[in-house]
Length: 224
Image (tube, rainbow, N blue to C red; front, side):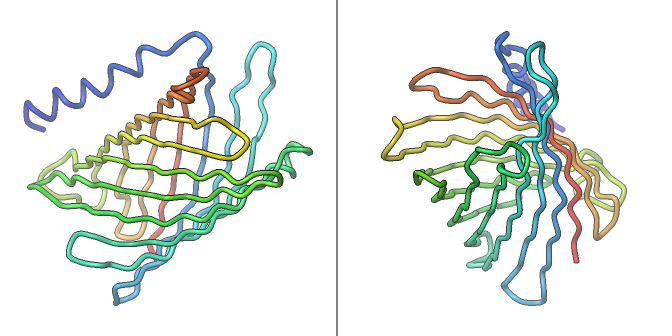
């Protein structure tokens, strides 16, 4: 990694050392299946669960189970468009909480510069709950790169840095502006399997009562 990207990596790490005392810590685990036939189309299926870490006044708890699907069409050399459907079940684990159905429209653009890949992702989402609908726009800037050599081979590690801004509006709540910073370390186990761990710092509700949350992620990505 050259000097510029070393400094950039350190710069992104700094906010993770500035957590407020009221920061909540959570974990999220994911299994993803990716199917890419010999065409412009590809398909993604995911199962995810989210849990809270034990706190002084709150025990460990599982918050929700989530089932997702994305259908993606390669629209050019560097771009793609996707349509996603997500179902998040909370009621099984915490009776009385509203479940969520989410529709997502996405445009992704990514180009490679030597061993570095820079990606832009724009999402528009409609989140349907029992008593309200939330509309959210998201933009993510992401940089990923292999840690050994100029390309990623089987058995090698890679890293990624992502910065995302989210803006939500609904009829029942005031607008909500969030910021997320994600650091990822992964390994290309084989041509069909990647394993990842990540830490994400979320600064939520920036325009009202600011909240801090830290997520620790694990993911297994299987290519069919």
